[in-house]
Image (tube, rainbow, N blue to C red; front, side):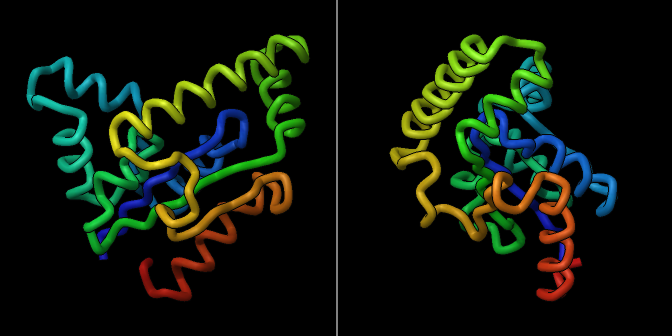
Length: 161
């Protein structure tokens, strides 16, 4: 099966690291906002929806961009939501971006608000609603480094890989 993984995430959860690890293990590319916008700028497609559907014709991991909703009827799409405790996310943002606690907290709140608004605007649904995903991973409880292992074992058990 041509597995397509969509990964929605709260800012600072480590989801990009999980996606990179899965990408290496599965030998499939990761696409994010930058990749989708690059395809749009080439004027090949009229909308992000078209770009995401085209990318999902082959195995891949798509970070954000409402891909879970866009591909909800695609049988080979597996939708994941990555979350973490706010304090853990702030600490991760501080370490990654070199920001102060207050600046990291402000960046987190701003980014989460933008993502929630974007998702609602484009889907009419609440971002992070458990009903929109096959699996929810909390990196505060599971650890960022363990999430790729958990997903690989799950995909193997389901014989998706």
